Amino acid sequence: MEGKKYFATGKRKTSIARVWMESGDGKILINNRTMDDYFGGVETKKSAVKQPLNLTNFSNDYDIFVNVFGGGLTGQAEAIRHGISKILILINPELRSVLKKNSLLTRDPRKKERKKYGLKGARKRFQYSKR
Image 1 (cartoon, rainbow, N blue to C red):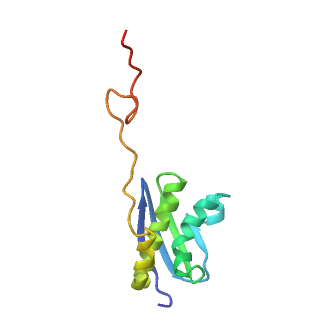
Image 2 (cartoon, rainbow, N blue to C red):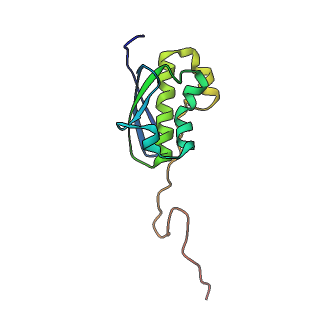
Image 3 (spheres, helix red, strand yellow):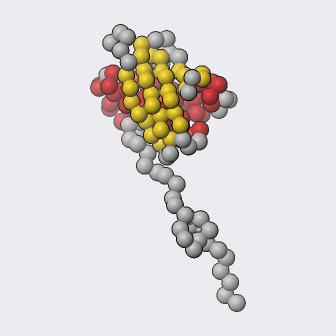
């Protein structure tokens, strides 16, 4: 296990995160920036990324390198979380039950609904005038 790199891809909405993990001291780099620098002061995004690590007590055992693109900050944070969860299964398959119980392995299929022709948006209509 020493010196071995693990790779997985996580997705959410239109965000795609490529995640690499290797033995280390627990630093997380997202697009060659620290997590604090990337997400700024938004603690909910940081806690979403660290959720699988905290559940499995792997928070300071591995260094994580992420390349993420597409979507917004929430989609990117959840894509990273999905990728980390998939890697933890590769490292230790016994963690599957813990991660699955917290819905971290299921790819969230919700996406933005497309705009329909004749309407203002996906569902919003123009005002109806009877007379």
